[in-house]
Amino acid sequence: MLKPIGGGSGEEPPAPQTPATPPPTAGPRPLAPPPSAGPPAHSPLPTPHSPSPPIGYRAPSYEPDPPPSKVPLFVGLGIGVAALCAIGFWLFKPDAPPTIPTAWTTFEAANGSFNCDVPEGWSVSGTGQASGDSKMAEDDGLILNSGGAHVEVSMSTVAGLMTGQLLFGSSTTPEAMTGSRANGVFTFQKRGLKKHFSSFTDTPIPAPESKMASIDPGGLTELAGATGSTKDLAGLKDALKDIVKADIRIAEFSGKKTGLGMGRPVRGVRACVAGRELIASVSCWCPPKDYPAMKPVFLRIIGSVAEGSGGSDKKTLGFPGMGGVPITGGR
Image 1 (tube, rainbow, N blue to C red):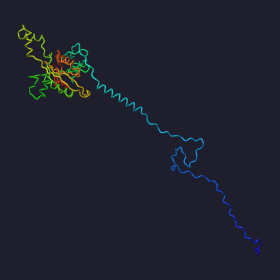
Image 2 (image 1 turned 120 degrees about the vertical axis):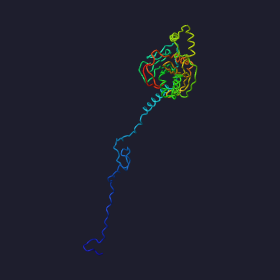
Image 3 (image 1 turned 90 degrees about the vertical axis):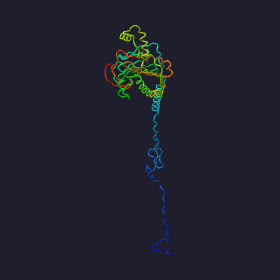
Image 4 (image 1 turned 90 degrees about the horizontal axis):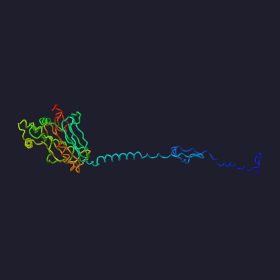
């Protein structure tokens, strides 16, 4: 066997061995994804790649806001319902029955322009100068109330009626100069009542005896003395009854209250009575159930209205209820 030059065994050297790969070692964990890629930052649950919370960590709890209390709403509704009930009770409660008068007294206007009988126990208040106040925008008059019964008396002057008919009437000769003085005011009174009562109807009725057209004994004596005869005053008085009659217009009416009256039915009497200088406009009404008892009371009030000794301190241009425009002073 040939030996290699330089010595040696002549055998092929073994092939070099590749060193074994060492087992992999654990490296650093990958970074967690940005917050936008996972649940909200405030979520108590950790993301799959987020670090584990430390031992003893307790995630904060987030309770939703409680709903607003409904107590104020219920209180407001309760107050509203109570207010509506109170208003409804006031509007729809039945009128108290009027007091049936057992005694009467006399109302005297503060300015002495008129007087009339009024039931004791009723509410009485004068208007205009009849109340003692100088209120040129109001007619002299009277208002009576008892329960559901209501009476209004207002006074105008004959001179004012004639002036009004001359200025605003269609005739050159006013009815108040040649005919009834009460009729013109009676017509105007109806127009006013129609504004306060719907379904208004009225029917004429016989007139009561009125003090506005009465003749006192002193006047008869003066008349008899002027004629030279004082023997038969009673016969003269009977003769005058056929000549001097009450200038009165009167009617029963019915209707329903308008406005806050909420359609309540009423029955009543309206009248206009003319005297020497004054014309009385009287309107009386009450619930229908009380009308049979109140009708005699209304008629007595109407018949008792009389001119006073003081006369009227103002002449009114127009009719009762128009407010009045003073056109001259004195009687």
